[in-house]
Image (cartoon, rainbow over all chains, first blue to last red):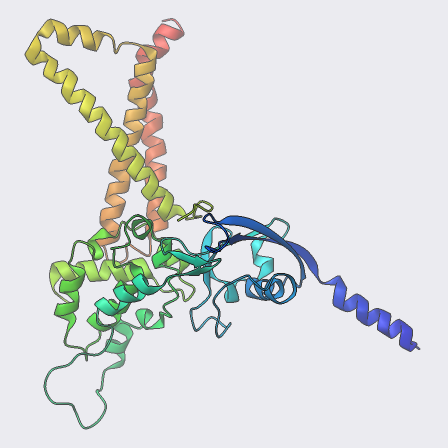
Length: 253
Length: 126
């Protein structure tokens, strides 16, 4: 029969034994302190089944409250915490420590191609401006119907993949073309244009195609597939861009 | 923006980098090639003199490098065309890249002796 002391000991063992020590190597930038960004290492005890976001929380809550990053829902839907973890764009809230080789330091950087404001927070304005430029809303002509606009299952299926976008910017900020020239619309804007261009209920496909026919539109895409690899929602981004390119050539959509 | 680590892209990104690098190398070759061929207009002797300086093992190895660059650029170019124009191209881009690499390896092995035979003969006897 276990005495209370051994139970306590067991409990203590079971809560500590599965924790591992990992190093978070975080790219820090504070324009009020230094003009240059620098790396800072944090050691923490963490369950390998926890996420990178949990690690960042531990750092912010227990070690350094000045660490700045965005997160909202923390469950892969709001798209706030896209960052570059071990060199790749991912959502911190969907990346488990155990999937990252925790024996080595885990590098955490802000996403590339957008101006860093502080630590992991970047200026998302150019990203959302490109999104607004493709008119990501239903445009129709004529009178509004008295009931909902019906659509066949096949017509809905046509653009199903691109409805999944959460606007986290993981794709756009993984694109080498976007890094070099922020004028490029970027994968996310094209994905959201695709969502309406191929929607049978929408009637502004022609206008959106003209917008993307611009020199900073779809033709800048070099099919590096970084966007497809980075998308936390598994959208086949490059395929969507290629479909818009083909729609521009054939005018069939 | 301060530099961080290198972005860890996958096959698609590195094939694009290789496509760029080989494209630039081929451009430099064409630049030199147009200049030395234009020497014929200066005088056939000047052309012969310049081309005679190319007959070294180093230039021969560079020729083999040129074959490598052009083969990769051409084969990967077909892959990029397929990605854009074939409806399933984006989904099979990795398989197409490995096909390109396989064909490239076979053709490079086949070109080894024909391109380098002069150097092999001068370095290792008849």
